[in-house]
Length: 188
Image 1 (cartoon, rainbow, N blue to C red):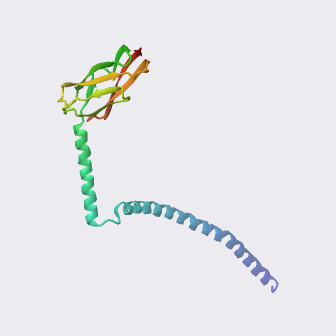
Image 2: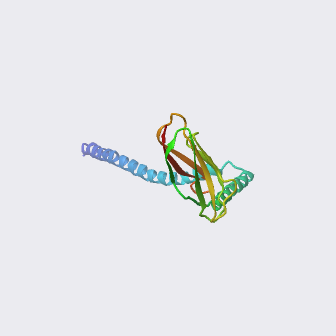
Image 3: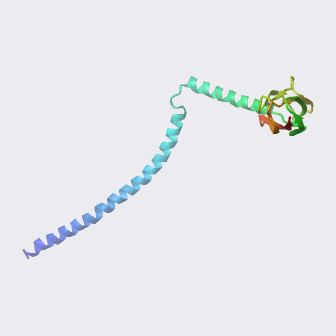
């Protein structure tokens, strides 16, 4: 019996030791998995908190009030700008002078119509080349009314053959810049 006791202790110890080897990793993995889930939940909450804090966490009440007022002013200014938009149409998008003699003045009038319900304000009319000189209307165009954009084309000496120039019109329309073209075939 004395010999069985050390064997029993050995078996008991070795089973305990084996169980420790199996149970400790099992518990460790269980704890890590459960901590990982909590960590993900906390991280999502932390992200919301960080987002809120970084947006205005360092601001004083006066700064927050000023920021809110500035935002409201910008929002109103944008709404006012959009409310002032109108629309326009040209009587032609392309004017072809046909065949013209080099180094001569050629004129065209493009009729612009305010098709919106606000006054049309043309702030600039420009051309893609110095040989084309447009003249913009001087006053706002009331809704439903028309005005004229005068364009002078003067080909430069040596500028022969097919010529195409773009005239850009900047106005208080939703698409700020509208365009039309003039064309000519220049010969000597």
